[in-house]
Length: 172
Image (cartoon, rainbow, N blue to C red; front, side, top):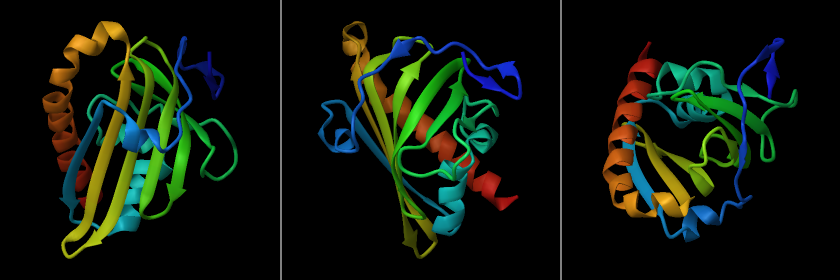
């Protein structure tokens, strides 16, 4: 269990394989999506990476319980805890290069979804604001292998919704 302000956030029972940032390029189940957000890279990076509780304000399914598990400023090696759709995830930051790159792996999850998961974001200047690339890499448990053909359309919809929500969130 993990505590924040004395309250238990939830159990995280399934350990995943520790992967490095290269997994984002080498995974056999790698999904890449891009969009343009009409805000500068620094603001986009901060919303995506710097404040885990804020993710719940724009990313579908996340709540606002996200927190860093260390008192240090976030950076490569930092750990955080987030919750999506009631499932708790412990992550380790793999890449922290404000305002252009952020990547993390999932270390533990409340459900046995995969043997390994990593996500990466590239945020580059664009004439309209920022070009954002999201990479989702997964080594799913064997039971989920037959479902991997559904991952791409489901993740594409999720990224489209998250991007539209992020645009609105940053425009407030």
